[in-house]
Length: 230
Length: 230
DNA sequence: TCATAAATGATAGTAAAACTATTACATAAA
DNA sequence: TTTATGTAATAGTTTTACTATCATTTATGA
Image (tube, rainbow over all chains, first blue to last red; front, side):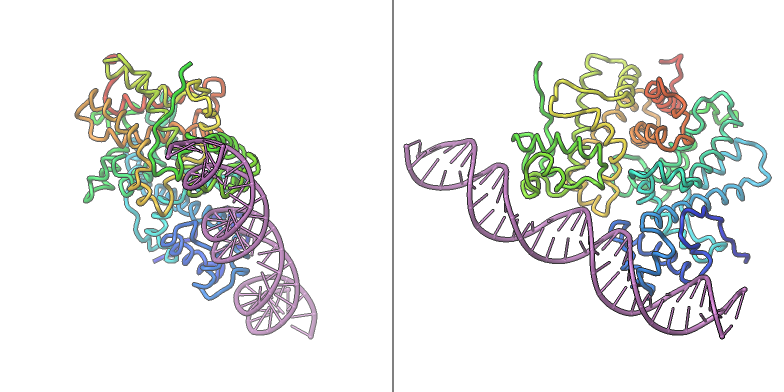
């Protein structure tokens, strides 16, 4: 099977971790450790120990641990965009295209053999638990100027453009899609930890399908497309 | 004018800050400092200095700074629930009731003279910038068991119940309302910091009204109530 | 009004986290 | 062979979050 590499914004790292063995080890173990410890308990010291390297070496790849989180989340959104491009190839009907995109956003994530170094399931849990921390900081604006959030914004635009294709008169395509992208993860978090906030908590077997259904109804009703017209 | 006090869950504090002069000062200055410094740069040391007290004294009111944030956010949601109760008194039409609730959620907040100690405008900014940090932690489940998130959950239920009244067949009232409550703040954050994610960034004059419109359309379309039937 | 306890203040200290600095050495490209 | 690069080893600094102790002030109520 062919192996792929996602092109990442240069400001996300000091040295590109995809280019060296140590870099890939840092990312691979970083994902595992953030997933198990949580972002606040995760430290470069612990990571260095785990991979038999040193703190100083890790700092040569990532400016600090916050940047490392931003890198991982950016990777996730780049990956999602690639999957949506892939999944909507040769589909011309925009309603169909939107449905595929939403399904890919909402579905439970598992290993993608194109990227053998990344544990997508663990990364997905990190997205659910930690991704808001990438931008809920005092340096959002500087970070944004550096393009650190390009992945998310680009995906939002891509899906919003499909919405516009379906209904050019809908006023809030970007607001709708950014809301939906956030809700997709938030609802899963709520179902797990604050169950009274969502009906998905009762749906243990088919939670991800029902989440998809919830979001699909939300989007298509918002832009005024009923089942009949689809 | 009569002064009110919101009844807060006992687990939110060590000693009730509403009961003493020092306690009220801690909350009042705490809000101002978190608003200006951001939660991460905010420390009990700085707060103690500001109010001419000591770290030790503040720890006698709040177990740690995270609990203090949770307290402030809980206060906000309790306040919102009270305002919605107040604003929907004697309104029987559930569609009307839901509209009022959404309007109160989405509108820009300013001073409420019933609570002279609290700077609601500053607290509102804290909610926008920091509220997710209350539950995006490893101890969500313990904190939830202690009832720390009761305010938000109770408000969500209240509005979801109105939704059920309007359309008992809609499957996801809680998911819809928790999504909307989050989106209400998130969209304002995006408009300020990641403008390409929402149309609200272009609407400088009437951003809060347009946010309300966006959410209203979202909700009423989702539950299948068009303008005509309202 | 005096005794007692509760509330607050003053001061110091600890452990860990986040990052920085410096030196050294092996390897591989120029 | 020189030079740059990657990695390691070690140690240090600053800040944060929190704890401990004891003194002093203030409130309460017998």
